[in-house]
Image 1 (cartoon, one colour):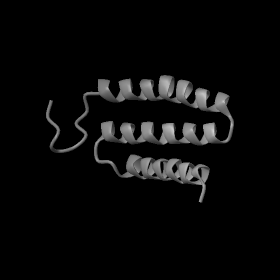
Image 2 (cartoon, rainbow, N blue to C red; image 1 turned 180 degrees about the vertical axis):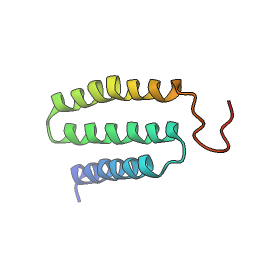
Image 3 (cartoon, rainbow, N blue to C red; image 1 turned 45 degrees about the vertical axis):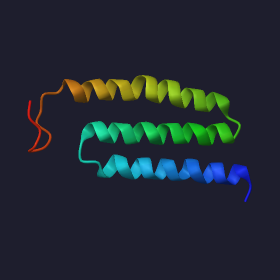
Length: 87
């Protein structure tokens, strides 16, 4: 196995683990962190494919705007998510 194959397997594993963590995390903030890991792994795969523009767009658009808006929306809600959460 060469270095490129190992790097691709690493990024693919991080993307899959991030997606599974996003679905199975108990707290919303942890879900968002797993989503960040998944986005960075996808950007790494784009870089390996030679698509630097797509990697930049992936990081700037998704992490810069979509994730930030969703995170602010989640943090500004005053809803009790779990039984153990207290305000």
